[in-house]
Length: 217
Ligand code: 3PG
Image (tube, rainbow, N blue to C red; front, side, top):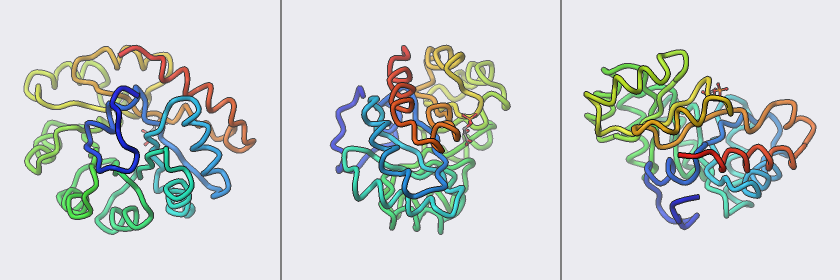
């Protein structure tokens, strides 16, 4: 946690990215898991938590973490519409991550005063996001869309952009991504595997988080 951020104060996208080397991408199907999971990640040193809107329980999970784990900074991932953003804001999400970029999502985040990490995979998408003032972007799906070679190519024309590569990042390749000058952090689901979650192995989650926090960047 490099940047000392008041867990309750307004955030910037840069603060979300700089807090730890990894933003965990979380899929929750049971609201009862939300609070112990958030505490386990916190215990391992990770507090920026991306809970994806991929399950019917996601909003209730965001709400539970926002209410009961104030030291965590819960955000919402997989936001694909203005309505998603508004629902996440109501649930207490503190930041938004999207798999792509639309002006509607960007505007909804501005209106809700929430930082946005919009997903991009092409130069045109970067330009659209930049046109709307977003310069901290999620590179998604990172490995599938070109990986480190793509980031290196983008560092020329888009030298003012910082990325959070997500999709295909693992403990084995995370350090290489983090060493790139235009990478501020990475995103990944490996900190919260479905089987570990299902058996409530919170110590394991804390251990994964500790290892992630120890990644050099
Ligand atoms: C996602 O949106 O699912 C993220 O990109 C996570 O990808 P991963 O499972 O490859 O980490």
